[in-house]
Amino acid sequence: MEIGDYRLEVVRDTEFWLDGGAMFGIVPRALWEHVAPPDEKNRIRLTTNCVFIDTGREKILIDTGIGEKWNAKEIEIYGINRKRPFAESLESITGSTPDDISIVINTHLHFDHAGGNTMDIEQTTVAAVAQKPGRSKGESIQCAEETPHSALRIPQFRNARYLVSKSEFLEAENPHEREQASYLPENWRPMRDAGQLELMPDDFEPVVGLRFQTERGHSPTMQTWRLGAGGQTVYGFADLIPTHHHLPLPWIMGYDLEPALTLEYKKRILPAAVAGGWLCLFYHDCQMPLCRLIDDNGKLRAEPLPRGPHA
Image 1 (cartoon, rainbow, N blue to C red):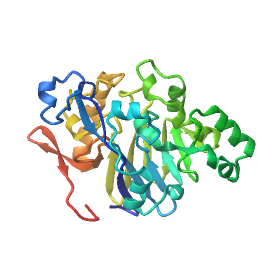
Image 2: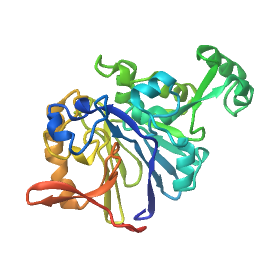
Image 3: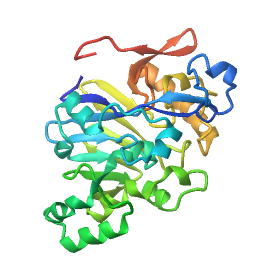
């Protein structure tokens, strides 16, 4: 898809399942089960829709999915149904490999947005990693000794700058008790140790027309993003509105630390999205990750995009 001079593609990582009650908060199951049918464990099907932007000079990835560093028990808990590695999806959809990515930006560092930041390699390849420019053998050996299960965790996008807000980084290092299980240090410390992590302001513009802004609600430090180019706007809600089923104002995740602020955010941003004809990215939506919003007699609905390169 062309957005001005930029190319944008949605790169889906893999499906996984989370508790439906947690995903819809105070909304009764009798309502949400009609749009998001649960399995026998009360979980609903989700995915992670990462965004690739090619500016001509930079190849940018916004969020990196849940990653592939899961053990058998965790795969069962989250119902992870991986068909192929994220690297294969990236190359199939965009024509770019992880080594081609020059900037990775995390809206926040929860495992389902930052899990693909890093990957495991077996210690048999440690010697090769140690020869990478800018990394000493001593540093590689030290990392290997600190990592269990005879694996070394390294940045998946080895040529990229990883950008995350300083506020979010500090939150991840000292998480609220309700978020602690969502923050896994293995998803950001390898980039820090490799010198690839850059801490950004609460609001920043990595390239012309692409802006990240901190919005409270899901957490105090999560960011949304907006791309404006060629008279078009693409907007990513991150976890404030995770799927198009969450468009009704009261439909707010139980995971949100400040649901009242999520509500105020929705009251402000959704009319702007409708009025501006924005393309809206729902990060966890399996059906319509990218769509426009229509006001249908006072009720918002998601309108799928027509097929074609300039949809």
